[in-house]
Image (cartoon, rainbow, N blue to C red; front, side):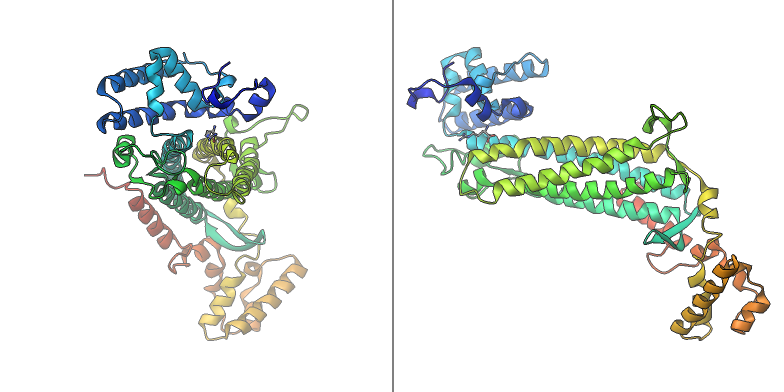
Length: 463
Ligand code: ARG
């Protein structure tokens, strides 16, 4: 088959070599954006008088026909036409004849592919932001239900101090809020038009880059033509933000997996998000959470892959850039699916409030309460720490907990201890009283929920 760039070539091509260079198997995802980019370009060519109005009208109607056919699944692409740009150009030629050839005036596939990627990623990031918002709303709702649900707070995965389950959920809310801010920031740099940079150096035609950018709904125009066709920073940023988001999802999944285990039994995932075993009839596995944790690896991989592809590339376009696509597409798909699954899983999980609270009752996570109690009565905290440490040691030897020690014995250790100590040692009291800013006390947690709701404009529709 004759190549669109075949003029300079004499030899015949070989299919297996062509196939190696082709990107159509994956860049057909850009078909719609490619047509959109071409429509903006030809309208600009017409406005500036580079192409006659009549020719432009023919090209526009041809492109619109292709867009309609694409939506109906009626376009088919061939590997002989290498990539999505040449495929669309060929299809346009089939549609309207030789005038199709005028579309590529003052343009190169280098600015064309960059334009397509900007358009694609802008839409994808906006969708991811919507999905993140859904997740944040579910977390706020769950937090509201669980302000007074007490659970063990951990450090080193050892019981540390009791906390409100809502506080735990809101910690993730804050992480996902930062993720959203990062993607918003990413959008600022995605919102640039490379169109009109042509191959690398701009063009001798009197093009209007602002106009085509405006038609594409892209806010700004790359100032430097070399940068315009060579920049993949915004994709690397996207992969990096996605990696951080996946890391957050993965940490939360790890906790869900622990919490569903027999040892914890803090939560129950609904059947829809669990799977059974082919041999062990009793099994209910948290597969979806595990899979999200697992898929984090591939997203990290895509980030490193593109960073590595880019690190040695001289300006401007190099074919290596073609390797920017699959990782980006896969990341968009992975992140979108993981967010949807994860949100559903959190939304439908059942929380075993009693089991959670119970786990804070027969442990030493109230040791700090006793130390604080003494410190408030004037004992230097270090000394109080030592006293309580010794009490804990004695308790472990006798198989009891701090709250099981009779008042008399406690007063022997320190006469400052009075009967009100037992209320202080109760985990619910311990949580409730942590009212410092950002702490797990019921009041600051309630306040944090109000702030989160304000942040998500949840009060706006109330009149
Ligand atoms: N398929 C190519 C890519 O994805 C399009 C740009 C080709 N440009 C070129 N000069 N060969 O990067």
